[in-house]
Amino acid sequence: MSVPLTLLGLLEREPSHGYDLKRDYDTYFGRGKPLSFGQVYSTLARLARDGKVVMDEVAPGDGPERKRYVITDAGATEVESWLAEPVEAEPHLQTVLFAKVVLALMLDRPAAAYLDAQRAAHLTRMRQLTEIRRKGALIDALLADHGLFHLEADLRWIDMTAGRLDSLAKLVRP
Amino acid sequence: MNAPADASVDVAVEARDVVLSFGETPALRGASVKVLPGEILAVMGPSGSGKSTLLHCLAGILVPDSGEIRFEGRRIDTLRENDRSALRRDRFGFVFQFGQLVPELTAEENVALPLLLGGVRREKALREARPWFARLGLDGLEGRRSGELSGGQAQRVALARGLVTWPRVLFADEPTGSLDSLTGEHVMDLMVCAAQEQGTTVVLVTHEPRVAAYADREVVVRDGRVTSLTPDRVPS
Image (cartoon, rainbow over all chains, first blue to last red; front, side, top):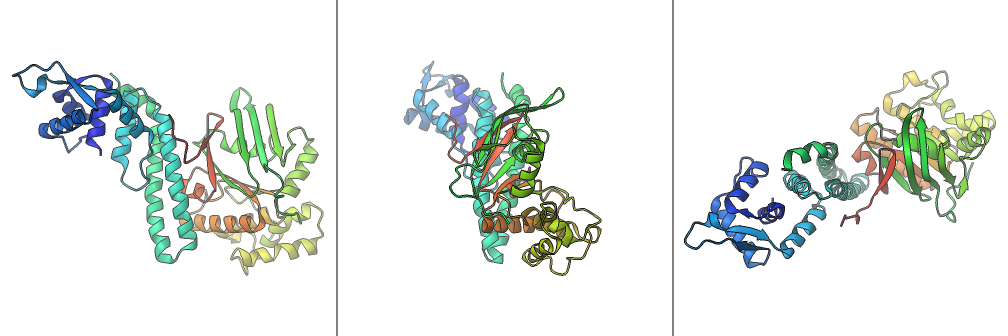
């Protein structure tokens, strides 16, 4: 899970305070593993240093909650690139993929097309593993089978999610 | 015996903007796809998406309401039923989910059936059918009827029947759908090896990703239209 990119994605919806970002992150992505405030603000500071966000409404002397963060064009470009790039096809990517789907829907991006790109990346890897299981030694074939079954499970999840995008969109859009 | 796919042909089979409805229910709504000679194409999609209907159109079993179906550049949707039937018998092979063997015939006679229907003498047809039993690991089962075969054995007999005429195109509709994983993968291994040896183009309808992974390329049918999935297709 990429915390900086996920926070950037949340910021693309609307400028937000650190507190709001932590609340939304924990609600959608931090199940069982909430972010600490320290991690939120240190991440936002790095994003500001790198020109991905800027602050407005800074009230000197008040707490950090008074700082409102606004995504920059560079930050928005990074979110776009991240969403559109298929995740490397390996098992246990569901949390990253889930975050991408939810954010894509929040940002009114083509979530179905992103899932198609991921489906293609998965099938390409499955094709490579199928060649190994067809032509390799038994140990290699069994290891390839292990990967194939996990990738197949991901693909079933992708298909299921693609069929539920409308319902998910209603849930995550304000 | 037919020659393998002609390398000089650019496209083996093609659907161009095909529309087909069953009564009031639209099945294909402008489906287009090209299958290259020698290619194994997986056609994926959810149940009811139209993927089997597309296969039946490509194979000349169904005639679209509009659009074109071409085999090696020639339109086949405008042919008379007799000519399409001859084309299916001589140039195409078929494997379906449940082998659909003729229960009254032996396994050997089932494999020889397309040759017999094409007018080949019985002795010659059986002679051409026999090598397939060794090739597909079916030695000793030549005289059995379909009720005496396991699911995997019956499906391998069906595969032999689909390939015995050395077809230009093999149409396979959920060929492993009734088999367990290991048996299904064995059938797929044999299908891919045999098709590659013969240079046969394969159109493979499946909803199983592990079966689709045997193909060179895959397309997805959704709501009667074809979407191409290519690795470099990253939306902007």
